[in-house]
Length: 235
Image (cartoon, rainbow, N blue to C red; front, side):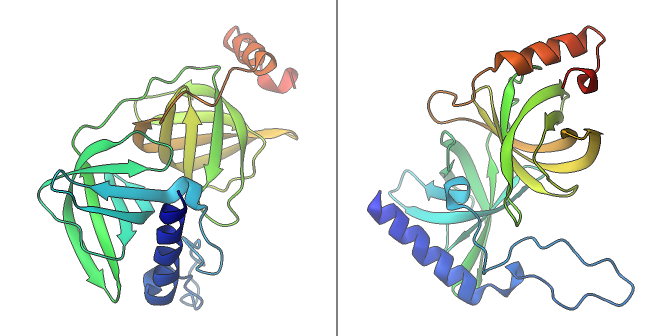
């Protein structure tokens, strides 16, 4: 574990020094809306959520940091090239390993930008009424617990108290799954919370037993809501 943490620390240091693409744009175009900062090198993304390991059957292995997950493409930052167009295994922090293939590995200064596609896109088993842990992967990295109130083919709605903005890239853990997605809409429901509409980009089975358990009060609220009562009247 100590060796892994040392390697990840070295990767972070290298990325912060050499990768200008992940810094905040400080001079927006006149009249344009200032873009949301994807990453501030002075404020590190929590590595317990973004640590990545890539390996292949030939014995190759490298640690990296998760940059983004979008439309099924996993972008990873590493310090060395990753073999492309051959089977690899990718393990994202907290997730079970997944079979995948790297389709590009671009060197920029001393940082490699690697694009990975998993072999099989998994459809998570999510249940209305389950608790969910949601973590904002953008500064200021807010996180907290909520409850799943709706599930679609590629979307999920979560009621929570955590202040997360529309457009945020988030990590969700629920019912033994870890999900990555983008908050499309934030709907205030009352003074105590808000409903987040999240578009799901990828899902992975969690490594080990699910850490998010049911909470009877929240489950009861959701059940009463499904019977026609409003959450606002219960909280």
